[in-house]
Structures are given as structure tokens and as C-alpha cells.
Image (tube, rainbow, N blue to C red):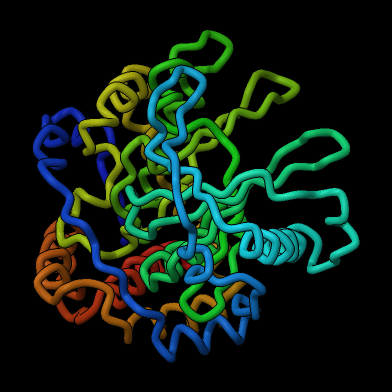
Length: 364
């Protein structure tokens, strides 16, 4: 029997010129509150926890100053300043949160740590605070983020944790979201400085871009422009391994355009896409897409009850305007030649059916 496995044509579709049309303008996405059904899921799977510092408390800074990088360029972050009473309270609470992320809440591990800097960014949808933690014994630094708890982002983080090769440490308390720092080269930096670095095998970069592209599409994670993903470079006993992973989940299942969920179509990714398509053939590209589908199906089988609970909550939630849902279901229906997409009445139900197709096509 012919497989119903969903595919995208990475090579031919990437070279049609559509990428120049796709990113004509991305509207700012509104924040969606965490619903009762999502809150129930978070409590059931230990994603909700009482925190000693909230997002609202961090907003009470008195002043701020632009943060520049080593080349004296504006990073779009601002270092914020609090009065001495407030910063003392925040510092203890933030060290406690770091201990929760890294050591299960064991405060004894943080006695030699201090909060070196708190940065704030108004550029992103979630208006994040970035906390820089420093080890006083060796000056090693680490980061984590505190953001407004947007339901879209929470769903995106949890889908990434459950379905991708990456694990995501995050927790929610009311309207406060805490996320770990994702280590890696920002995508734009990789494209500019590392893409053609000879020790990195071009075919491995191409393989990872195809897999990343497919993972984003089947779970409808949008807006993967270079500054919204990172590239991990890991030395191996034979060469160097590459992994591309998302670091921004604000645009989980919001936009109505199908191509918005395919990183290959963003003009900012053109150089990376052209580099990869010059080093791979269609059969190999299809093989890598198939590997993604097999991995997704295996993961869904292992976490059947948990993914079912998440997608049921997501299907009930409003995560986008109705017109976006209607447009996307029509475009997905045409893309897959599957009219069942037209029965979906929410972004969550579109994600559920997209994943269901893969689960069924792999016979698990």
C-alpha cells in the first residue's frame, strides 16, 4: 500500500524564488493567556512551580542603559538598575531559581554564585529579562531568562521538549515563565562566519537544515529566521557534528501562511539554503525527511499519554485569529492533498492532525 507519509520538496521548492516573497512583513503576535486546560497540563507534568521572583517584580527597575557588544554595536538589550533594597531581594530569589533549574532547588549549590547583571529586551514579543549568574570561585558565567507566560510559547517549548532531539528546561508560575539558556551560535553569526568553515562538512550542515526544516513544518513552529535559531557545533571522533535548534517559540501555530513554517522560505536564510542545496541530491534529502518522521513517530509512541494530553489542551485553546486558522487549513489541505485538514477548527487541531498523519504513516 502506498505510504501516506507527508513530505516537502526541500530542493525544488527552495529554489523557486518564493523565499523573497515570504517575509514581506511579520505582524506582531499578541500574547495569549494560559488557559485552565493548559494550566492543568503544566501542573500534571511538573511544569508549574512557585517561584521566589515574578516577571512583574523584575519590571520595577529604576533605570536602564544600552548594552553594547565587544564591537561597540547595540545588542538591543538594556542593562537595568534597581534600588539597593530591591536588588538584594531579587538577587536571592534569582539564585534560588537558578538552583531550581540546575540542581532541583538545592540552595547549597549556589552559595558561591552571584547575580552579575540583569538585562531587558523590548524587541521580542515576550519582553524577556536575561539573568547573568557568575561563579565567584572561577568567574564562569551562565544565563537564564524570565518572560511573560504566553500560551503560544509554552506550547512551543513543550512540543520541542517532547518531539525534538532537544530537552527544554522551563517552568511557569502564574504569568511568569522561566527558561534555561540555549547554548550555541546564533544562526546569523553561523551563516556569516562559520558556514563555509572547511573543517565543517557541508553535507552535515545540509542534513541538519533539512531535518530542522521538516521538524518545524510538521509541528507548525514559525518564524525561524537566523536570529531565532542557534547552531550547535560538537567535535566528534570523526569530524564535527552539527545541530540546528530553535530558541524562539513565540510563533508556535499562529500565522496563516504555510510557508511561514518552513525555514527554507525566509529570505534571511537564502545563503544557508543555497549552500545546502548545492551539496545534496533529492533522494538523500527525502531520506533525511523520512528519518525525521520515524523519530517523531517513535517519540510519540513512547509518550503517548503525555502528547495526547498536550494536544487535547492545545486543540481547545485559541492561539490565532480565526482567519489564520482557515487560511492555514486550506493551504495544508492543498499541500498534502488531504481534505481532512479542512475539518480542523483550531491551530492545535491542525498540529494534532499533522502529527497524526506521521504516526499513522509509520505504522506505529
